[in-house]
Amino acid sequence: MTMATPPSTQEAPWQQIARRKQALRSQAIHNPPTISITVPQHLLPTDPPTASSGPQPVHRIPAQVLSKPDLEITSLPLPTLLHRLRSGALTAESVCAAYIRRASVAQQLTNCLTEPLFERALERARVLDAYFAHEGGGRTVGPLHGLPVSVKDGFHVAGYDSSLGLASLCFKPATTNAPLVDLLEGLGCVIVAKTNVPQTLASLDSVNNVFGRTWNPFNRLLTAGGSSGGEGVLVAMGGSAVGFGTDIGGSIRVPAMCNGVFGLKPSVGRVPYGGQQGTGLEGLSRTSVQSVAGPIARSVADIELVMREIVPRASLYGEDCIPAPRFLRAGGPHGRMRGHGARRLRGSGPHGEFVIGILRSDGNCQLLPPISNIIGEVADALRAASQRYNIRVVNLPTPRAWTKSQSVMSKLMSVDGGATMSAMIQETGEPLVPWMQTRFKHGGQPQTLTRVAEIQAQRADLEREMLKDVWGVRTGEHGQKTRGVDAIICPVAPHPVPEIERYNSVGYTSSWVFFDYPAGTVPVRDVKESDLELGKELDTSLKVLSTWDEKCRELWDEGKTDRKVYLGSKLSVQCVTARLEDEKLTHVIRLVDESVKRGGRANRTAKM
Image 1: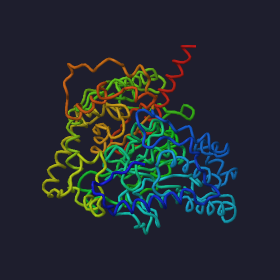
Image 2 (image 1 turned 30 degrees about the vertical axis):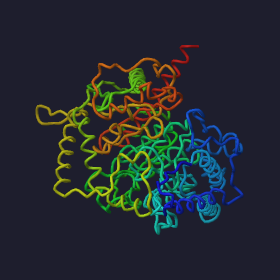
Image 3 (image 1 turned 120 degrees about the horizontal axis):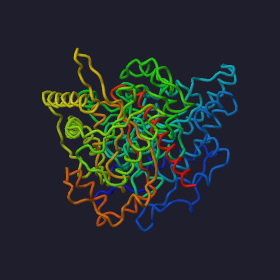
Image 4 (image 1 turned 45 degrees about the horizontal axis):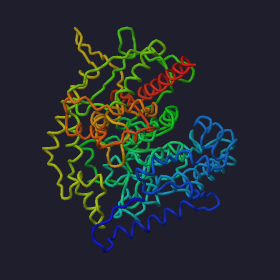
């Protein structure tokens, strides 16, 4: 475990707190001892990793240490798992225990947990089983009865810390649950753990001084992403059926990309966000830009399943949510089903085609070759499936508003001056973790109300531009407005999953929070050697677009980066729809996922 050390030889207060906290976590991992699993020493990776030790993938190790029944339970598709729980073929306790064992293995291999809620989870599972067997007479407690889930560390769970990896917040347990926690438990879920985050929540690399660094299970030389990095890793390792993170700059979608899973950033008001440990002045986020909560899962079907139950009930639990009476299954009214897959959507095309626009650059960072390749492959796969799904694929020019949004977003993100967070860090003498050392300054002051209003006015101008330049909103002869584009496909980042501390550009993700467009990550395939173009440099005639672009190019410069480090890492794309079109977004994610997989099957068949 890597932890920053202050220059003084005298121990700072945060160090003692971190030792106590890690000791309690270790105790909770192996308690109760009847279900604990210790990973054999010879299977543990080298810590910290070095280039000489290689990628050290650990994602297959659970199969070597878990029992066959545990592996079967934790690998079941969620509809099958829930069916077996409803039928009584599986008990909530047996499912919970299997996921706990897998989560404990994931923790030992990747350091992804902050608060193992194992004993609490088992007690909750027994309550569910008792209800099913007695009071309920074979009925379940909610539609997600017995489903093991996890939440990012900031969500309050009564009796447990929401420390965010900050020593000053340790040993101050929450007194109430977050609304999302109450909603999940009302649906019948069992919360098995809380997961690791970066210091300040403002980094895309999950490391802090209390719990240390969360490692990428596919390649320990690469980042696991942040700020919901622990969630992305735990879901990828099979230790949670569905994880819940938060996203303001990419904090759901980036970990999903880094760990090869699906992640959904909803619109504001779809999923309860409140009831979390804050890092700024209470209520100030409503004057700037609002973070949202959303799911990370192993399939789009799993995301649809939980969103279908959460969205219609969200406003009953969270004061920050809007009423939404339904979240349709794929192929509900207005769409024709094709099995259990994507439906034929009616869209804005001249013949009712669902129009998907391809955006290749935000105007601040050029795409590196692997990302350019995967965007092209997805566009080709969608075009090949155009008749099947009634879609039309068009290339979109980079809108000026998208390019400008990143700088305005940065202003909104810093309106509180960081004074509250600064005080939290300085209280126990914590040093800044490496990624934050050049990005966070102590002593900032909140912006004036007049200045915040000026920035929000800039935001409104850009929102209006996006209606015309991205969604193609036009006014007809008699004043009627129509739209020309229904969804967008774009990169999650201009570069592949980078090495630790080298994540560069957030504009491809933060901009969609700025505009409050729902967006999701879709894993497509692994990086292969042909993507690396070894020995071939970038076209030097291309103008450097920004300082972000300059840093991004360093990730491809063979004098500064061994491109082979990217081999086997995950390549993903991002799907985006207009504000509050979250249901449509899940259909688009499914459409992309199915089109890519069908294209892959067709290619394999052609080669046989």
